Amino acid sequence: MSFEKENKLILVAGAGSGIGKSVLENLNLLDQAAIGVSRTGTAWKPNGDFERGKNFQCNLSRQSEVLEFVAALKERVSTLAGVYFTFGSGLFKPIEQIALEEWNAHFVLNLNSLFLLTKEILPLLKSGSFLCYLSSTAGYQGFSDSTAYCASRHAIAGFAKALREELKSKGIRVITVYPGAVYTEVWKGREGFEQDDMIPVDDFGKWLATLSTLPDAVYPDEIRLLPRKGIL
Image 1 (tube, one colour):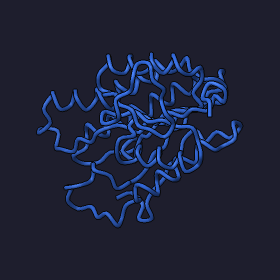
Image 2 (cartoon, one colour):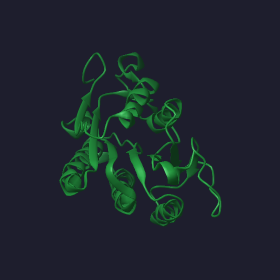
Image 3 (cartoon, helix red, strand yellow):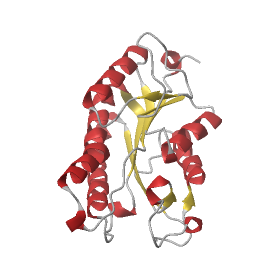
């Protein structure tokens, strides 16, 4: 399939593990033309193609790598059907234990990288394209030992709300998903939480991938999704 001809390429940012990896795998199962990008992806060749279904290397916290990857993408396609922003890190400590360096690194990946990638790929989005951002229950309420994480997830939600207004006239959909506990690496080692109480990452990735199949006229701007036990 020619991406250029079909204009249906979907990009999954953060496809190296967890939710992003599952989304990319499930997009492939849905026969969607999709590629991933992450720090642990396969090195891409300057003169090569971005083969569908593959995850390619780009450290999203490094501006130079983001700019280089997007420039290469623009040389190969004229339109993106959608972009999933699934990358991010957790930082769970009492505020007095958080070093400024940790705080800054958390926001560089969780917010600065999201802003930069969004800004650079906007020229590839057309009417009917979608941007899907992952916030969290921590994006609309507070949790102890989570000042950094709650702040970054609230920031993503606010960013998406404003961007939704900016892009409304262009017909570009901005979808924010606020998932409850999805079992990924971020939960390992945290006391007081049980894996069985959480949404399996593959189940969540399967559901998230289906957003790519919605008709252009269907616009779920904000979605809250919880495990059966609710907010943990």
